[in-house]
Image (cartoon, rainbow, N blue to C red; front, top):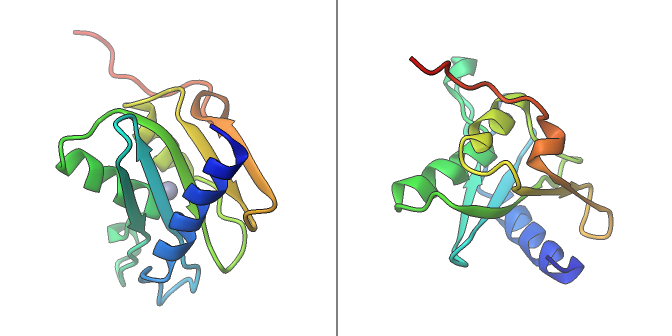
Length: 131
Ligand SMILES: [Zn+2]
C-alpha cells in the first residue's frame, strides 16, 4: 500500500469520525476498513451510558463489513480529530479472527501516519482450543 493510499484511507476514517457518538469521553473516532475486494467500510465509536454497551469505531466498521458478507481485509485506518487513536486490545483480537496481516494505519494526522501489521500489534491472539 502506498503512502498516498494510506493517507486516502486515513481521510475516510477522519471523515467518518464526524458521525461518532461520544458524549461521555468526547473522543470521536472513525475507522475505514479496506476489504480485499476494494470495498471500504466505515465505522464510528458509539458510546452508551452503560459503558460496556458501547462499541469502538474499528469493530463498528468490521461488523458492517461482515454484515455485507465481506470477511477478507487488507487495511484499517483509525482517526480522530481529538488526538491520535490507536487500536484497543479488544479490536486487535476482533480483527485477528479475519486477518493477521491486516495493515493498521493510525496517527495524529495524515502527515504523521504509522502502519503496522496486526500480528505486530497482537503477537499472540486468543484462539479456542480444538475440541
Ligand atoms: Zn477498540
